[in-house]
Amino acid sequence: MTYSFLRLAAEALRGNTGWQPAWRDPEPKPAYDVLVVGGGGHGLATAYYLAREHGISNVAVLEKGWIGSGNAGRNTTIIRSNYLLPGNEAFYEHAMKLWEGLEQDLNYNAMVSQRGVLNLFSSDAARDAAARRGNAMRLHGVDAELLDTAQVRAMHPYLDFDNARFPIKGGLLQRRGGTARHDAVVWGFARAADRRGVDILQNCEVTGITVADGRVTGVETTRGAIAARKVGLAVAGHSSRLAAMAGLRLPIESHVLQAFVSEAVKPLLHGVVTFGAEHFYISQSDKGGLVFGGDIDGYNSYAQRGSLALVENVMEACMAMLPMAGRLRVLRSWGGIMDMSMDGSPIIDRSPIDGLYLNSGWCYGGFKATPASGWCFAHTIAKDAPHALNAAMRLDRFATGALLDEKGAGPYPNRH
Amino acid sequence: MRIPCPHCGERGGEEFSYLGAADPQRPMADAPMQAWHDYVYLRDNPAGAHRELWQHVHGCRRWLVVTRDTRSHAIAGVHDAKRLRLGDAVE
Image 1 (tube, rainbow over the protein chains, first blue to last red):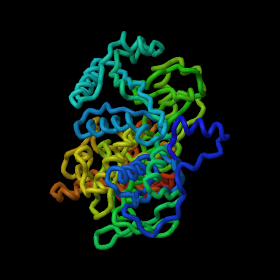
Image 2: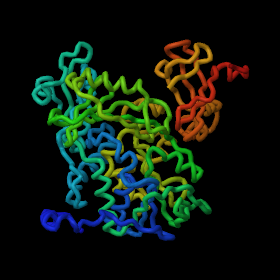
Image 3: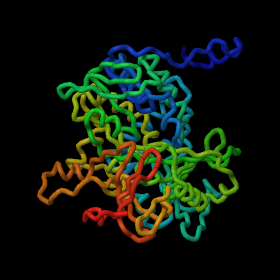
Image 4: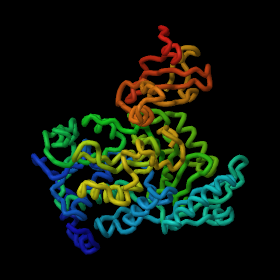
């Protein structure tokens, strides 16, 4: 069923009795050409692009819960392509271009809103770093503008410009950045993949990966064994656990990242704003709540809840940047488990086991990458080789030394 | 989370600084590159009991080996890292 204004009008006249579920709920087949483990945005996008770009539609997506129950439903919805390193920037810009055409492509309203992403800075050194980043972006054909205090003040007059410790000296603006509705992204990809013949198997947890003679042959699941010659893992947060089922150890630690939303208010904060002095980012959802977050808690965690010390840190950063937020109440907070890689950048690559592919290590940045991650992972699986866009996101970069360390923080996952 | 420091008693987690897994052993200087790669980069990253290094930076400044469940943050044991290395029975 194609969604359109005509369909909406017809259903309105028929009392909305004609709507169908957005995707089927099929029984698992004994075998598929490709299995994608993980029904989050990345896994569903992978299945969609496998079908659309490579004509491989005998594909199943295995999801242990339901679609939208994982990190896809618990993030701060920001999309941007303001990276520094060549191995990252072209990839994230590809994601941004896919976001720009995503809704027409999927025939689904993902509420992509290019309301701008503004990274503030509070010191001369931070301005230099922002200028360098902006220049790196423009060298890749990506929009970036360096704003001074007056220009930032014209956009966001309510920020605390004269904060004694962290005065706002300006910001780096990417106007094409913004937000997308996180749930709608997974629902849209699920529906679009399903329409191309992909089976979405919910409540189907992978409990084992079967390997024979160095080649993957399928997986064991809570809904029975399923055979496939190619298995892609898109289970960020739990990549180490899945890889361990195939005997692999990864350069990844799992950490919890918290996010918060305030009570809903009228339009207040247009655009995404990040605070240069601390790790803090905030935007306002279309529903009206301020959506914001900060750093990871900093120690290995598989608990989907965070510590109060980090809550305090995030609230202090919020008050230093946007004092009026102090009048709002926090409605709820949540924690999601991240794959924190050793250099802060993702891995989209083959694994040492033939037919087993890795899509992992997304750190904080998985949501914005969703379409390009699926697009590149589909290419890597279909062609058994990475695309030029994810050629730098190799697993063996930790052995060769070709790291993608945006922050230059070294092999400490909790510092990225 | 509260960590029972063997020297200072039970303290809030924010007094401590986290390094990472305690089990990787530093290879000898002439060890092959693969051994160094595994030591620097690869981690077990278990969902469950995890032996890890914390420093009590706002207390006694000692390095501690904490055994913690990464699913619940329940702490099963805390030992002074150096005394553990020297083979002393601690606690």
